[in-house]
Length: 634
Picture 1: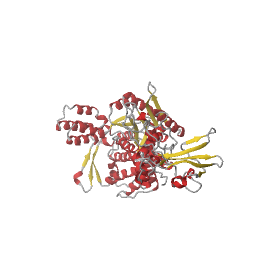
Picture 2: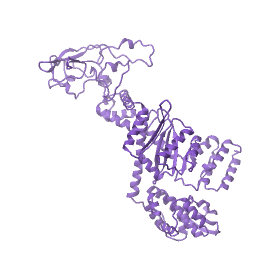
Picture 3: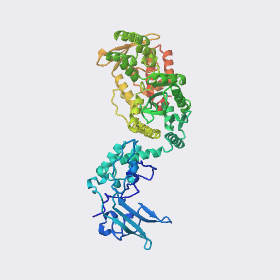
Picture 4: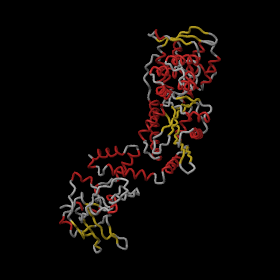
């Protein structure tokens, strides 16, 4: 009979790694007594340089000599030298009786696996020759041997190798779920029976790894993590507070790249809070915006203890402090009252816009009428003047029998914070909702979950941040080292725009140019304060529209598509360069919307000047997303 590795165990080396100080459960006899078999590559398995222990037959056992010793079940002399050790069956011993009669068990007792099996192999050191010799060998077992198909489930045969541990650590740090890690390794090794460990072994290993990272308490580990980042990033900013009982209360952090991005693109900021992203259910807040590629950028993050006005005031004050005292010009939120009050107290000069998507969702919840939602959406996004808004609002109330509705009355009171007709003279840089925050939350959901500790959460958030920045790098590469194909009839405009704008912004401008090329503009009449004209879409006479007021063109560049069309109507072949030069001749520096507005107010006596200034409005609105274009314009 051979000494099968299925039923021979190693008495002490059953831990899954030397990196963890793991205390086994008192009831876990497998942890207390069971041990792993010898590693097949161990030098200690060499027997006279010929055979391994697992390969020996009964007749090979007696009086064999060993050159090295194992690390199992050892006996040492007074000098600490190992003089004896033994291998025993994995069913050797018996569970302590005191663990069998527990009355207050918190969980079901583990099944018994020990049978006091006497099978063993003992070796001792021969001082004279310096070799190891067999001193005791008991062949017989008092139980059936484990069949081969179950061999990989015997505790003695289960262990994570060093390679397995490294692979598990990397996959876990990347955010891969433990169950998926198990499936991946099993696939990699050709099946679960060849994995070398079970799902439970893997979960135990990951749990010990997690606890090793927060052995100095989770809050301290998170703070130390931020301190470590600040040591490597001179621009890094972090701030936290403690409660009266010395518990972590609020924490905010922003790395150097986030702060740089804010100073480039931080005029418009969207922020929203979400919970259930960590094991403590702390509200998580992200400050985000839009960069020159039209992509989401993250300016900072915070974990709060609650969502009160005072807490949000602390967060906003800390955010402004982190950004060197620079406050945003516009803020988009979901309408939370505590946020609203905090913004009024901290961001005094910022325009506060309510998220259009959240407003529509609230409308669905409060007004159970799909036709109302369609009309209400027009009030949110259509470019009306104030009088037309009030007229349409009254018509909706009457049409849907909503006169006296409390929700409608409260919504009307905040109309200046959500209706486009009240906000069209403000710049919001493509952001009308907090959908960017929702998109960030969706991405983060891939990396974090509600079981994450604070240190895990911060580490995983950094990986999500790197993904956003990699997307920005890819977009920058495409913009700088490739050229778009010209597809519009106004190729001169299109090619000129492609030289100044990033690729994503250029696509937006090209769409405007394409639509403008299909428009026919005719000036109907002019007065000192008014230009009346008609806009006709080619091949579609039914879509004639006319605007009498010049108000829609002030500051916001609302009807940008008419600008290019008007230049085309006059028969000029000016490019964006020539538009810039023509306005420089007028000695006006169009670096912001106030300048454009002032010129429109002062120079609206002729239609030609009015048309030229609308073209510049189009230029300024588009260039706002590109630093290089702004430098050229200035």
